[in-house]
Image 1 (tube, rainbow, N blue to C red):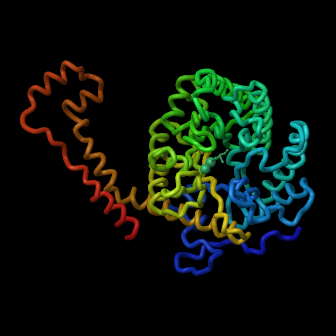
Image 2 (image 1 turned 90 degrees about the vertical axis):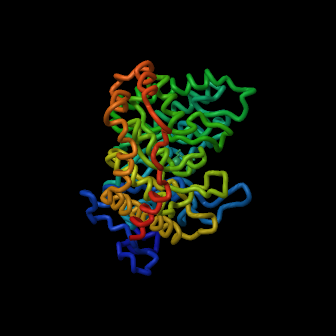
Length: 437
Ligand code: XLS
Ligand code: CA
Ligand code: CA
């Protein structure tokens, strides 16, 4: 078969290379902190942005054609599969993620959609085998079609709930068929536009009912991977129920779902929620809920979900710092839920954008390992909390202290109680000195 992209396999050439189609920092086979870089980073391609998004926005039509030279709709979708695997293998990306509707056209009915999927899935399976590429996670798009205008499992319309169930059932079957290690729920329209028309209690209960059904069915058909919830505070709805990691944890615990779900943390969603990417990762890891990552970045001047390729090395460093300190990925990975800008509209840009993102995360990994090895940040934090290791602090941590015993102790304290400086600027300068050497 003829190649679709006139680009050679992208290789590591090192930081001095000026070749745009080479990695400067990502050296997949290089061992760092006991593992190959590629096994730390577990890069994944997002099918929807790379094979489907054509640059259409609310002010204009697409700027890049993603039919890859084909005319007839099923032929286009088959060609997308070949393009996807050629691109991944040339970039050395070993995982991918998809929504049901990214890989096959919906047609005019559920039956037609599912038989289209049945045509495409075997082609994907054959390409996965050919290239040794794996499925990081699957999902169903239950937010684009007008039937989901009021949500899917949180819709006021029970028929929308049922239709979403049929989509998720099939998407789970495909995920199992392709050996996926994850299944994502991103509640695109699981939220509200106005509380004036919303029964929030019923919507939350129904959402939990839906997730329970999915877990039951997934386990029944042999899905052994992780279920993920991907928090996002807003967009497309004014308010999404999966606002951020803390909100999702509270929801899962209320409905007894916390054992079945982990987080798929997206950088840009963290910032939309008013947090940093690092905050969301850290919170997930301390709650044993860290699963996977949608690797991208937002734009702090824009209040929406820009899904840009990650190039900010401070962010990738602090993200990898949290990920490595938590023991790294198990079933998850770094999925580039990112699209080249509308003005970056060539096939070359599909490669250049991934190279930029992969190099930025490789730098993040290198820096994170250096920060851990340097040890000054850890040492500072340990010392900062040393008052809990002995005396009254140890009594608080062990549960021995009571309000009465603490009050009695407090009365014995003399002088001003001024804790030590937090030394933020000093710590920030350590970060710079470790990053820039
Ligand atoms: C949209 C989300 C979406 C999920 C998968 O903002 O990021 O793409 O990752 O449905
Ligand atoms: Ca995402
Ligand atoms: Ca996003």
